[in-house]
Each structure stands twice: as C-alpha cells, then as structure tokens.
View: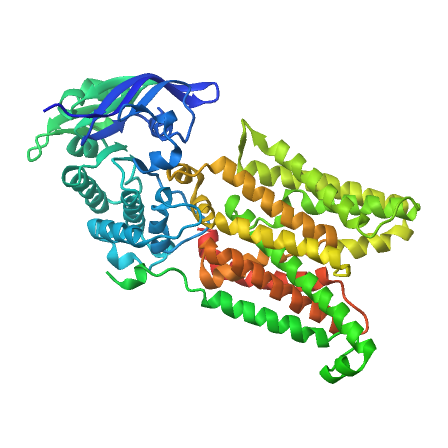
Length: 265
Length: 333
C-alpha cells in the first residue's frame, strides 16, 4: 500500500532576519508517522518547528502539507490540520482548564458565534482520550507541570489535527510523567492516526518512541532515518562532543545510549 | 462528563454590577457640596438644575471610568503584563502636553472654543502614542517589551517638557495645569457627553468581538499563531482601540490615575481572565469605581471638592497592594 506523504519540506532555510540557523533541510513525512527531532542545544530544533507552523517566516525553500504549500493555506484552516504544543512558559494570566480547552475550537468558530453542540462533543471526546476529566474545573495555576502538559495536549487534539508538533513536551517532568505523556502520544499516533513530530532532548526517549529521527547538527540535517540506523556512538559523540556507549534495550530492541563520565573513561 | 463543561460563563455577575451602577448613578446625584432631596428636586427649579448638572457629571464619570478600565484590561492582555496601565503608551504625557500647550495659547488669548482643550489633549495623546508605536516596531513586529519601554521613555521625555513649560510660564498657569493633571469631571456639554458615550460603547462592542483572541493571546503569542490567529494585526487593532478609549478619556477629564490599572484586576479576582466577562465587567466596575470616587470627592471635604485623581489614587493604591499580596505567589513564582 502506498502511504500518503503528509508533510514535505524542500530545501528549507530558516532563521531570524538575516541570521540563518538551518539550511538545506529536506525531508518527507508519511501519514501516521511518529518523528523525533534531536540535536544539541541551540541547533535550531524549535526554530524548525516554528517555521513549519509559520510562527517564524521562512527564509528559503518550500513546505507542503498534503501537497499544498502551507503559505497558501489560511491560518485558521492550517490550525485545523496542524496543532502545536509548546514548552509552556509561565503565563501571567491564568485560565480554568475548561477555558483553555475551548480555545482549541478557535479555528472552527466564526467571530460572532459561541461554541456549539458539536464543539462541546469534540471537547468531551478528547478529554476522555487524555483522561483529564477530573481537572476540568481546576485553574491552570493549581496544576502540576505534567497535568498542564496534558491539558495543552488535549487542547491540541481538540483542534482535530492530522499532525501535532511538540516542542520538548516533557522538558521539566520526572520520568513517570515523561513516560505517561509519551505513551499517550504513541497511543494517539497508532490508534487515532495522528501524525506526530516532537523535538526531544532525551535521546533514549526518542529512540523508544519515534519511527524515524531527524538529527540536526551545525545548521543541517546530520542523519535522517530509523533510530536503529542513525543512533550510533560515532554520530552521538560527534554532535554532543562527549563519550557514549550505545547498546540495545533488551525489551524494546531499540538503541539505548549510555553516557560515560570522565572518571570512567 | 459533568454538564458544567457545556455551560458558558454565568452572566449573573455582570447583571449585578449593572444594577449597582444604575443605583449609584441615580442616588449619588443627591450628594455633593449641596445636598438635594427628592422632594426638593420636584419642587425647586434651582435644585432641579443642580441635580441635572450633577447627573451629567456622574454620567461622564461612569463613562470615563468604564473606558479607562476597558482600555486597561485590553492592554494588559495584549502586552501580557498585569502592570500595564492604559496611559503607558504615551497617552497621558502626550495628552498632558497637548492640554498645557492649549492652556498657554488660550491665556495668551489666541483661540478658544469649548472643545479646544479636549481636542488638543486628544491630538497630543494620539501623536505621542503613534510615536511610541513607531519606536517600538521592529521588523513589522510589535513586541510587548519594546512597546512598554518606548512608552515609558516617551512618557518621561514629554512629562519633563511639560514640567519645563509649567516652570517657564509660572504661576498663572500652574493652577490650570495641576487642575488638569489631577483629573476632573467638569465637562457639561451634551455633545461632549454624546461623543464620549459613543466612543465608549463602540470600543466595548468591538473589543468584545475579539474576546476570544484576547484570551488566547494573553497566554502566549506563538500558541496564538498556531491556533490560527493573525496575531500582529489583532494586537495592532486592539492597541488602537485601547488607546482611542484612553485618549478620549484623557482629553475630557485629564489624568485619573489607577483606575485603568486596578479595576481589571478587581474583576479578574472575582471572575478570572475570560475576556467575554472581563471586558464588560471591567467597564461596569470602572464606572462604579469612578462614580463612588467622585461622590467621595464631592462630599468628604465639602464644600471643597477634592480632585478625583487624588481619590482614585488613594483608594486604588491600597487595593492594588492587597490584590498583589493575594496574587504574589503567581506574580513572583
């Protein structure tokens, strides 16, 4: 069966103003894939996500979503297709979870219209999917970081997107929450056919969950492929400038990266 | 799933605020340097005249309080800064300079018309706002930090020009300048009242159409873009609305401090940040705040009237500190 190409990035350059951060970015993503973007700090992982989302204007190249150039797609229509979960910065103004979830229907609502029956059905369905029914009346301020991230993932789902882009969704979470969130994302990906691109800082997480990995280094794609193919110690030592050993995880059969402190070298 | 999820915000609170406001507008008219009675208004022509004049003044106060508070609520959300007040984008200092220039020219017996002072204050506000806006724009983007910074800087420069002019022209002007700077509700022309009312209501209605965008933008601009909002255009429009509201208020009533900063926070304290209730709530609460302050201003040291800006600052300051204490854990986390 021929799988649909969902996202196609061609010869993309991105950055800010005349400062180029990434160039010659070329990759294609199939529908239903779970992609990881990894690379050292400051390499431009978030910049790439934001360029795809048209938060930052691109400097060069093309991006196609379902064969349509995304610059040609009105923002609200694009928001019905692609959702974004950012690293939540501290917001000064807090909202109840219910209010935050309603925001996910924004792309579907006319200016003078309130949320209708169908909107609330979608909200209820997605709340069921992520299991945050008990948080619905709480205020965002009262929630733990893990719970907040679940709320924003739910809001993304309420946009009914084909593709969700996440920027280090578990950046400040403990491993319990980390696994909980990635298990959820994986379920959404496999059972609900939502394609996912996530920036990750944890290589092992990337290795366990992602179908393919995009490794960025020095402004370009260093490697692009399945975790088993691209995560070898030479690459990792080169891009992170440290010593590692890569072994297979006995259960998942995916590569696992062990860091080696200086005193053991 | 609980049904609560489905229900929108209750509008009961807004109804209560509206009711309180109407009562206050009617009843505070009886109090002032001259106390009036219901029977007196019906029987004596003089008392009736005073009541009507006072009623207009109260109406003006309500409108201006509502506009400043609405302007503040909008600006706080757009700049994502709870300390933003509607004057901060150069509006008060520009308006002050415009007003002072007019007072000087008038006393030099140039040109005088009843709407002259408000008009030149309004022009001053708008010009200095446009300057702030211009200075803040980088690559076609308005960042909240740049706006606040250039607002503060332009404010300082213009205020000092104003101080210099006051010092240069000495006593004969000082009285007028101070009277203006402390805020006043002394305009009685029906046309002025009508203009203010129309601008206030238009501002409220248009901003309400953007309540959803304000909710989303106040949480973060990048997320707002990803949800499909044209953030730069929307921000620009909302900043214009806030500034128009504020410049109108400043033009007619001078600088009534603290209302636009504090009132949105009082409303947030009760009903959260959902702008569909916050915007009309701020308008109503701001109106109540000024009508009450003005009643104080008229009666506390009667027969002397205290400038209303003094009262709002004296009431607003402690209130703000109280709210800040309650919110401290969030603000300084």
